[in-house]
Image (cartoon, rainbow, N blue to C red):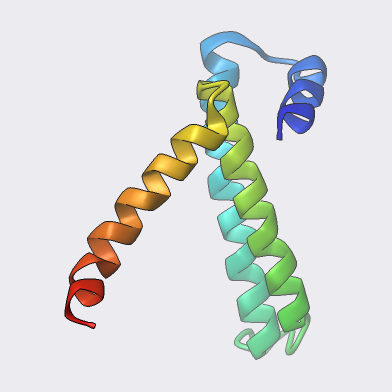
Amino acid sequence: MDELWAWLQAHSPIGGDQGLLLRMLKLSEEVGEVAQAVIGATGQNPRKGVTHTWDDVQGELCDVVITALVALRTLTPDTRDVFTRHLAKVTERSLGTARSSS
């Protein structure tokens, strides 16, 4: 992630707070591409028909994850630790009660 972040930092035409905000907005663009791929995979646009596969959807979801991690890296160099701690909180919140009763 650090290498992708460094490359993006070096090649971004806009920096500072505006660059930070634009990096966060990139997530919306990527999520929109997931929606487009799902619509295309299910043929929900009758004018276009089936234009994507579920493999395309998987790839777009991966792009969302990568974009989110790069955005997180933009906010903190401790990306792995921040993500790991947050994942543990979400896991405990979601599965904590279920684990106790199993």
